[in-house]
Image (cartoon, rainbow, N blue to C red):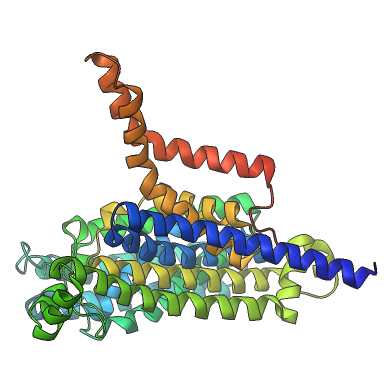
Length: 446
């Protein structure tokens, strides 16, 4: 058998194995719908689609270029913030009370940073350069606070029970998805310019710290997105109807009665299906672009840099610049997924962003699926999110069976209460098993 025939046979076996893995994951969703409810299955499916897009963004950074970033949570939150800034309705009272002062303060703050950088670059090396840049920053901070703080207090004092923020532009929410990507990309550029020249562990520390700073800002700056009071009732895409509207439609009620569906259940399923179609379109577009880029000369260059930075740099490649490029692209994809998630929830809740859900879990998806393989990241996104949702009720059911013969007491109640921790144990167990028996993931990079 020739080398070409052996390669073709290996690719055929690999394709069959990958299809079998996707079929097995699809069977999990079908079983969930058939044995529990299709509403639940579709809810898990929609979040799986979003999680798969997040995993693709992390895979671009790690699988393409070997960048270990732990800032997924921050980029996701910035995507959610973009939905508020773009699609929420403006609050006229807050704008009248403090809007101009807040905007002016932000402009002055940015100008102060720019002036400090310019001063640092223009002055000759030495103590005078450091003192000059520091003086500009301190003066800029004083002016910034003099303008910004009173405006913030005035804006937040406007109907704080229901508003207290400036609101957004009132534009269609679909425009917020690319805006979320752009906002995350801008943050990634700022992080990358300072951290990408350092060792990989410094990048991980920097991205984790900045992600926590982003969440802290969202929680405390009420003028921006109401802080921990949350922004609710964010608009849906125009193509997605509200369940109440469907239930008030005579044609929909006739259709539901003809097929024997409960109108409330049927309307919820229809809405989830439309959301799923939108998310699927975005996922397929991201996969197509990712695969095209990966197979191009640019993709081969990125993998060469990942495998041996010294050799790539010796061939004339600007490693730091390419790292910055892929870091920005991956962060933009994560930010867009964050905007999609906030759109699905119809609210921004900064208190729910935590590293376990929006950083660790996404990394598990990439590692289990197969880093460097886009389709592996998608598989990991679907499998891990299904497990994350379903393991807890399955664990409770298992504990109830185990403790059924026991008498009432502290041990029985303790075991039943411990079922909530089954999902954490399962994630760790899955990760350990994959690292032991399939260290390159379920769908390894070819």
